[in-house]
Length: 301
Ligand SMILES: [Zn+2]
Image 1 (tube, rainbow, N blue to C red):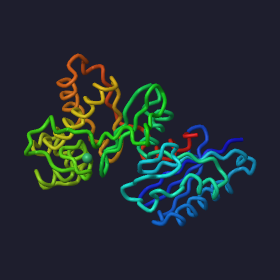
Image 2 (cartoon, helix red, strand yellow):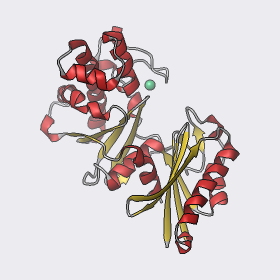
Image 3 (cartoon, helix red, strand yellow):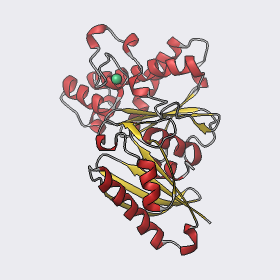
Image 4 (cartoon, helix red, strand yellow):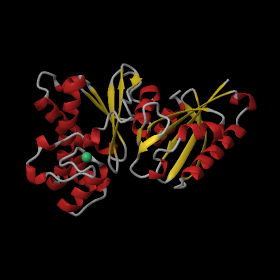
């Protein structure tokens, strides 16, 4: 019998779950040790805890998937670069996890894993082709094409946050992104940038409060979401022009403000891709929230 375990490797927490038929039936979590050997040992402990609590016969065929924020080598055996878990770089993560757990391990980029979860168990289940954009501290993205996860050469496909939104704004509104480029999507549309602009424009950085003001017609608050939606539309237009997608799912901390982003997003899409009617797009919130990492990872292999 096959046992499936999903691992969500975050900068501060390691989350592990045993998944049966798309449902997380048992969970374990711990703080992320910022040391390679300690992290592998902690993950192995968490996995063993879950196995000890399940039926003994269920560990005959142990499949483990792990979503990790980073860029991978070609066969996904190690992380080449990651923004906030640099102790993982160039270390044999897959091999060590297999040794420590006795399972078959597959690694994938965390944003791609979330998209895969939506494809299997969430809002993307009836959609053969879509992009998932996660609006949080930055913007993550994952691509599903023809019902399959498209991670690309190194797991970085769907880097929606660093497409350029510059064409949609006057130059004085463009700022430098953490990646060094000017005018990236996430400098307008990440949850943290919306909060920062809210603070600058109307002294309110709390996103739900800012959204409530915008829904009541507060012009400055509304302009934050109009800019974010326009940036998302400009960048999704580039995706549409390349791949002819029609479905964009929005996840992450800013997904509850999608009602304020949708119209400016569609306006920009219509402007950039004028042969495609706005009614042909589906712009929806993702469904799985914080569980997407475990659910997607558990179904990687
Ligand atoms: Zn960037």
